[in-house]
Image 1 (cartoon, rainbow, N blue to C red):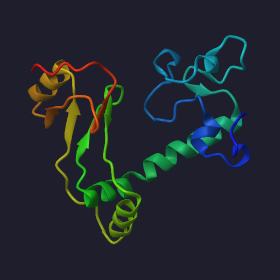
Image 2: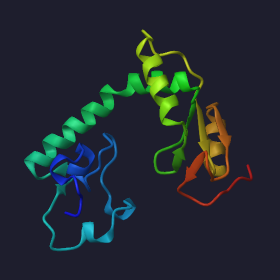
Image 3: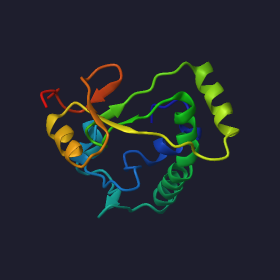
Image 4: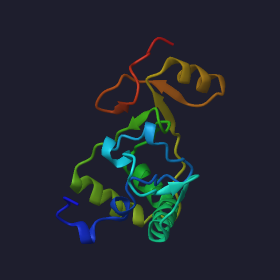
Length: 160
């Protein structure tokens, strides 16, 4: 309750600490939430992957629907920016850093596109076992050290 904009906070904040990703269960041990979010004695917020509170369930459903609805727009923006790296959920984050002006320009340019351009996406990982598995499946993949372009969840294992 320390947020200076609590009454008008975004959806993602309203559902905290519920999981917003549509296909991922909320597992407190894997969350990076402060430990007090999971203390015993707090109200139950979810049961078997479903929000208990009706308002939270409604907000969560709207948030997930917006994420799905935004896929095509985000793909067009990524194409305009020339960003085609992705990471596996739970392993890390592929990072695309752009200035606010360049992002605004890319958003405006993407709105003029009728379709999502074809892109050759590459999975980025810093884990040799992941690299080997994806390579065996003929998936475009590359090893990258943790750093500015890739925020890893695990220590580097770059020897393939």
